[in-house]
Length: 159
Image (cartoon, rainbow, N blue to C red):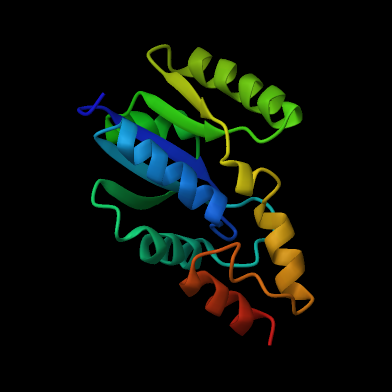
């Protein structure tokens, strides 16, 4: 699978250590991993441009990983990038059910597509961007939950 392009999509508001772990693991499996930062339809803490820049900075050490933004159907982004693999994390049964529904619909829209589910590392099992935002909003220390550059940006946002 070293010649395969995989896409790890999400809003990444913000990118967490859990996301980072999944990207690192996907980078070992696939030749190229594109972290696809989705434009958010909901109000996001960071703008789309900020989320792209933050993710790119945090993931820069990974040589076969690139970060790109997208707005629209994920399957269209995959086709544009020559990718046939979506990588998704599934922390809970609820996540898996939702992600399975999305995988089935994406495959209906793009029949050559496959979705690969990676379970989180144990230490990231209950970590989510929502939890990180709430801790940071209330002045809590998120330094072990996100890469250093992101922790600094969260502190700036909530000062």
